[in-house]
Image 1 (cartoon, rainbow, N blue to C red):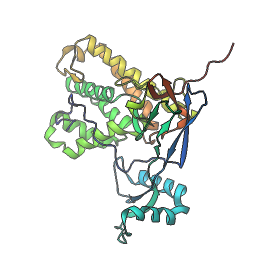
Image 2: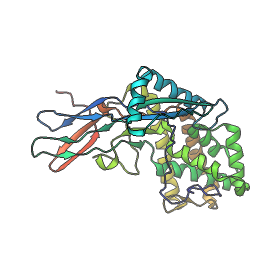
Image 3: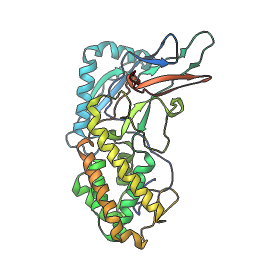
Image 4: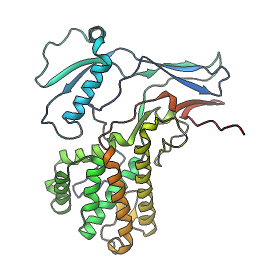
Length: 341
């Protein structure tokens, strides 16, 4: 369990699993990505192979990240995209899965959709680079490491000062938990850790790791030339990201800046060991110096709140270019071409 009973994230790298019922945009039949450095400007085609059966729970009493509103949104999206193709998609599904299952549980809506799209093999010329692009990945804007650092700092600050507001604001703003639920969880983690169930700790862990507002779907890290690792993955600067996400990206940049400032401060004061462990007993943590840091974090958490129920940004081929350099051929975010003088 990555989130321990004392309320801190451990030093492990386990990220858990993205929720199965994620609100995603279905894959399209064919997508294209132009290759930089290819004299013929050939294209990489991606393809959808087969169909999948999707059972969606439509229970108004559902709570949490995979609640009724999220599930209904996903159901309506799939119906809008594939409703007229249900007969063909079901038959495609049955070709590889056998006969239909006539029993659909109460409260479940079943729909058939194309399988998640995957790029096909690509070859550039008879002896040029070739690659298999196996799947798409979820890239964090604010890194998984920094998200956990922010959490651990807020918990340490609460233990030192008894000020629960920063970590409650984090839960409400970043994780989309209700204020009452957040306050109860914080109280239990601070004073009666054993009262926080493994299920609740998993809920917090999954939300911190996989909230859609912080994720962009793209090529897997080993197929990216510009993957930043544990640093900020800025999908706004010089890319072809849809302008509709501008406000969201600005809020994310502000959040990342606040966490980076906090990180530099606790490292400078020697309050952090390893990557994540913050000393909740350190006297400096309770001083006035950290009040501005806390205020900056709380403001950043609140800035995310208006976006915290948004799904991840699905793969957009217009954002990526395939860069060929010698034997190395990988994707990177597409940069805007410089205007000629």
